Each structure stands twice: as structure tokens, then as C-alpha cells.
Image (cartoon, rainbow over all chains, first blue to last red; front, side, top):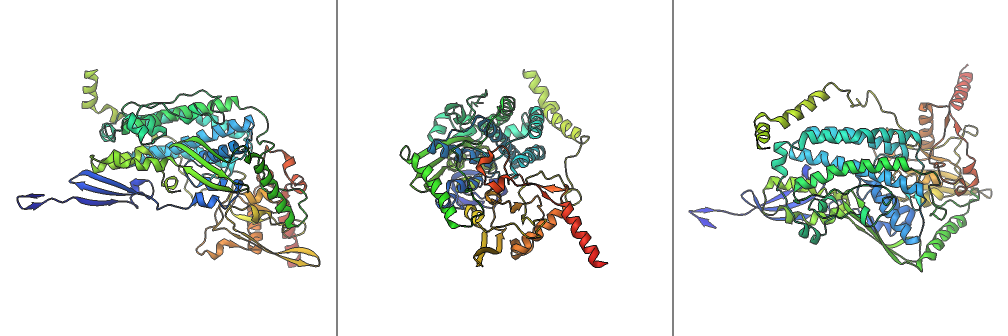
Length: 397
Length: 198
């Protein structure tokens, strides 16, 4: 464009992959005209570890710790999703107690993940205190994870057909105390940012996406519910013990950054409610189904013989083969903190999956970024990335 | 409604509310742990540094070389060298690559004689990668290190027999595994040393 001898050109800016506000290694190529974004192209793949391909080389039991690493902020939900898929494939009935424990732990993971989200989202926009408070509360939850599972982040806690170890009363007391106090802590975060004028200016009316568009883009989870669509896998396709507990699904209205933020803040309270009910209703009984997959533990251990191991693999194969006539492929999804996390598994006549595909919500949400960002200011990109809550580990897998 | 908004806008009510909250936090108990000076409690069953249990009676490891741990390992970081001596399989070396390990404790669960353990020890970072490849001697040394710090007289890892699971799922030796005495063993060793010195 020529105007009185001054040439105006579009400026291309690389945002990331090492930008701290992109929550990992997301690279956005922004084409700017002044401060307005004309075009936004997300580049992903910097954290690709080939989890889908790796699992083709591992047995179903061995693939479970891999799913920890898909979305490292809520590894419990990932494990759960994988187990739900395998159980559906093999027709394993999970005992009631295990179902409740899983639901409880998954909601703990949801709170953990949302706490990291509120911490980083607020930090990006400029509220540092929320970060400190959220990390303080997350620490308590991680400690409780460590108490039961033996690890703070990569829990590998559920098992195909149940859970790994039982919970004790000490843990339940500690969790109950925390959950009793938790809604007050959520109020603390809200005091700091909910009505804050800086926060409102940065979030209200930014990154608007209508309900119809959100459905067309394939959004799920709080990102979709912020636009006013009532959809939650926990309500529509209940798995584990979600049909036995009472909870509401918070829905937004305008579909902007603020509404998505409100949705997640209300989800904190609903998660706390679910955990409370799970503790109260926790039944007695076994925690592992009788026909659950074993991790290689044949009888007569002192025989040092390769045959034993081959025999055990053979048993596992046979168990799978029995169900192959019923299903050859399965899709099961769970409500991860970020959205609908699906596992699609094609099974052949070995003890390893022929193909495993992870339907990662972060991958879909990263795709909607151009829609949200184009036409807005550069500063709003940060708010948008924060509000769709992507984890690049899950996005790239 | 309008008046309230105006008052809010002029007197910065919501900002002062936030500032009051942060001020109140100044007088509450601190949650920060000054790490190298003070340490938080690690719960039983934390999956930390690997060790081979030293049998308090035979002074040796309990591994029988059944290869179950290396078969079940998802990251394939366990290497076992075996040899046939006098018609008997003997474990020559047992190597765990800790830099490859993903700390899932499947090996601990699969071990039929409870020879392997992921201890509650979490401070083992090193400057070289070579130090993170534990051989048999190093693994036994890890156990001694851990045992000297352990608070109780007996040690029993949670993942040897995960609580709540039907014991019929375990091999016999695993089912009958008893807690391993620690303090006594350490004391016996000390006495022996004292005697030899005298």
C-alpha cells in the first residue's frame, strides 16, 4: 500500500515455541497489521513422543503408564479413559468400590488440572497472587495422590478391571477435610479476580465463539460449555460411578474468555461435591475384578524357566481372543479436564493393540485458535490460549 | 444498581477487597518449606530410587533371575545377565537404567520373591548419566543407604502386595512375604565391625 511515500507492510511475528504464555511449546505465526492480527497459524509437534505408535509395541497393561504422559497435568483421567476403553473391549465388569475410588481420584485430578489452569491463566493476564494460592492448594492434592498411588504426577493408579491399591481411612479423612475447606479457597481466587476491572477488561468480549461455531469446530469440555452448549460426557455417556452421584454441569452464555473462566470456577465446586458424595457412598468390597488382566505373575515362582513367561503371555492372549469375536475395535471416551478424551483401539489376535488412537481435546482446541484470534489484538492471544486450556503434551502426544 | 456501580468504580471496592485478602494472608501460617534445610514427610510407598533388597540373613540379594521384571517393564530398562553354573541358573549382574525408568513399579509388583523395591529415597540426582545406571552392587548399596535412614525396624513396600487385591493373584512366596528386619541387621553388622576392630 502506498500512502504519501510511506510503505505499510504486514509484519510476521513468531510467538513461541519458547514463549512462557503458550503453556508449553506451541508456536503461533502471527501476521499483524499494526496491532491487529490478520492471520494466525498454530504450529504443533514440538513435544511429539509417539505414544500411539509406542503402544503398538507394548501389551495393554504396559501401555497404561504411557497414558500418564499424554496429559501430564491430569494423568489420572487419562489412565481412567484407557482402562474404560479396554474394559469395554474385553467386557470386564469393574467392582463397585473401584468405580467410586476412580471417580473420586479423577475429580481430584480435575481440580489439580483446573488449579494449574487458573494459576497460569491469571499469571498470563497479570494476577500473580492467584498463582501462589492455587499452587498452595494443589500441593495438598498432590500429597494425597502420593499417599495412595506412590507418585505425585504420573500416578498409573487404575488397572484394567479395577484400581491398583485400596484407599485407607487416613487418606479419606484428609481428603474430606480438604474438600470441606475447598469452596472457601475458590472464593479466595474469585475475590481477587472475579470483579477486578483489569480482569474484566481483558476477558469480557474477548475470543467470542458462538454455540453453533463451537459445535462445528468440535470443541468439548468447559470450552464448549462456555458458549452455552450443555454437553458433558459424564452426564450423557456415564462411565464409572458418575451415574450414581449427583452433580450439575455449569454452562456459560456468551462464549467469551470470561464465560469459560466462570464455567471452570463452577466446576471446582461441582468436583468438590462429587468427591464428597463419593467418600460418603464408598462401598466395601473388592477393588479388582476377577477376570482383570494380570501383570505377568504366574504361579510356581521358583522355576526359572522361560516357558512360564510364555505361558502367561499365552493366557493373556487367550483372554483377549475370547472377546475378539465380540469386538474388534472400541471407542470409549471420558470427560478430561480439557474436554472429551477418547481412546480408539483396534485389537488383533495378540496381547498388543493393533492401533491406538487418542482423541485429544487439546489438539482440537489448538485448531480453533485462528478463529478466536483473527481480528483481535496481540495481547488477546494470551488470554485466548489460556482460556482454551491446552496442554501441548496431549496435543502432540 | 447504577449507584452501586458508580461507588464501586470510584472507591475501587473490589481492588481493596483483594488487597485486604492478601494482607490477611500476611498473618496466616506459612506453607513454604525451605527445602534443603527442612524436608516434608514422604509417604510410604513413594516410588523413588531403585534397590535390591539385601537379605538380612544371607547378606546377598534375593533375585532368582526369573526375568519377570524385565518382561513387564514398559520402558525396558532392566537388564539381567544370567549364567548356568552346575545345572543352576545364577544371576551374574542386574542392571537398571534409572534414566530410562518411568517409575511405574510394575517390576516391584511382578517380582515373585520381593527382591526388587523402589525405595522412598528421592535425592539421587547426579552430574553424569553413568551414575544413574545401577548395577547389582550399586543397587545393594542403595538398599543399605536407604535402610540406614529408615525410621522403623521393619520395612515392607506397598507394591509387593498392593492392599485390597485378592492374595490369590500372587505367587506363594510373594503371598507369604514378611516385613524385612532392618535395624537389627544394621546393628548386627555394627557389632561385627566393632569386634573385628577390637
